[in-house]
Image 1 (tube, rainbow, N blue to C red):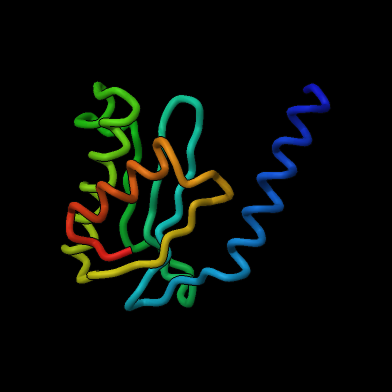
Image 2: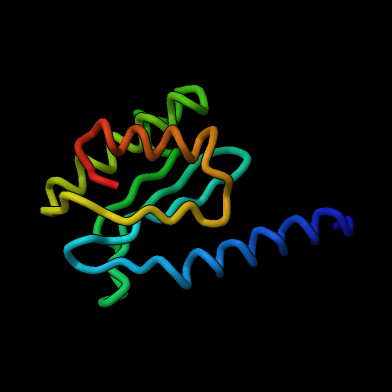
Length: 119
């Protein structure tokens, strides 16, 4: 692995730890955690007090897999909001995981908002 890639991962890791120091999920307001890979997007609502995942969505689900990246992210946010509603969750705190708030990460957040989840 090149030195530049290691440095890039390390910078993201530092940003991620800094964000996690400020953001924590509760039973009433879980943390919406985002992981973005080159191929897709993963998101989950986490109750940090109990250490449990309340709801999750992944890009490899059948109704998301065939979509393009931005459509996939928006639809994933909507799906996560639906699953949160079923679990009795109305609002959450957003953990962008060290990624910049733009592109697919922003599309996921907007999709969750349009699905009725308050971020």
